[in-house]
Amino acid sequence: MTMEKYDLIIIGAGPGGYEAAVDAAKDYGMKVALIENRELGGTCLNRGCIPTKTMLYSASLYNEIKAHGDEIGLTNIEDDGYDMEKIHYRKQAVVAQLRAGVETLMKMNKVTVYYGTGTIMDKTHVKVAGVDGTLSELETENIMIATGSVPSVPPIKGADLKGVVTSDHLLNQDKPLKSLIIIGGGVIGMEFASVFSSLGCQVTVIEALDRIIANMDKEISQSLKMLSKKKGIDVHTSSLVTEIRGEQGDMTVCYTEKDKPCEVSGELVLLAIGRRAYTEGLFDDETSDEVKSMEIDRGKIIVDGRYMTSVEGIYAIGDVIGGIQLAHVATGEGRSAVAYMNDSHPSVDMTTVPSCIYTHPEIASVGISSDEVKKQELKVITRKYTMGSNGKSILSLQERGFIKIIADEDTHKVLGAQMMCARATDMISQFSQAIVNGLTLEEMSKTIYPHPSFSEGIGEALK
Image (cartoon, rainbow, N blue to C red; front, side, top):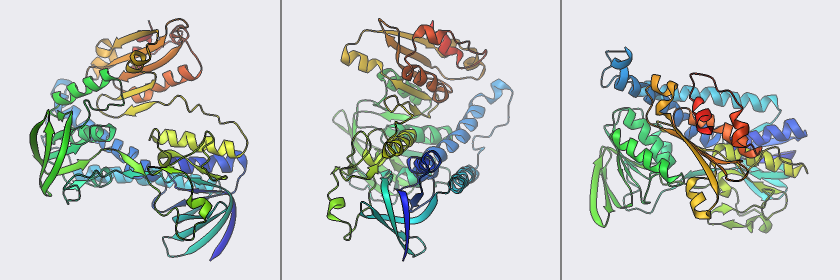
């Protein structure tokens, strides 16, 4: 067994972990060890954000040409003119390229990477059971837990059948699907619905709540449901799944909708009801009583405003602490935790977090929503522009969409924005910057927006 000493040991090499490692080494001169039991980049790079969006890109291109090819002068597109194996191969190539970039980043910043399972022995020692069979014991001043989350599996009869998969497994589907049933109409469910429906698959979405993407503004939820149905996606809200039966290739999902028993059949069933904190392997029988008694609530590690757990010197960030489960949130939390452990002030504002959904059209929001305005009875100004008149949207055959801005009635400071249009996920940062820096509608209006561009819609909305 070897013994190495570090200033910081990070368990988990997702966006939260590896970005924190870079900050710690580069900005604060800390000697850092990063422990990962799978691949660098974590869920986001290997089983989430990047592979999903890569597939979405291929599917969207195919669907646009198939639906509008003749209109824009591109013809002879076959109904089955795509190769799922090649889509899968490109997805893997993109992931591999970006993963290699993370590996290079760690080397450039002299971050030592251990491939294995990190187990906390006490607040200054971590044991690493290497994937190659080696065992290492590391000593440190600080520990950061960044182990992320895994897909949740609901207690539904039949959820363990071979024809039922989570998002992790569906990303490895390299054969075309004729039909797919998705249980869960949140972000993960609707993004996969967009991917497979664009490839000609019959998709059914079953959501227990009264609307899909319920964490978004109600207007956006309603618009997405309408557009999804227009594309042939069969959406059922306020529907509770009672049983799954069958075998892969011939699955049946039983559910109740408005107290009426219903069922739908498909080749595969995707469970997309959310994710749960992952803490497996963090503690074992040799872990100190102090660490074993770390405050955890329903599987999530509890932290204070500095991201420190109930054990001094041990921090936790990202999905494992709950909250908003987004890669960029984990990154911000990791960087903030590193700043706090060095008695410095974080450089990012964690109170303003943009949310993005990569459906077609894209959806993005930041700050306060119209639903929250109503609940809090706030006095605001609402500005809205429908993208049907936007030149770039028309020439690129975009679906209906809009940009909505919410500002304080007295000061005109921007409080929030909701967007449902092409490139919404790229443009939302303009509103994030406005909120963080206290900009008013008038101050944002001073900007000249290029023509033709999707961002012109922002200028129109501000008027």
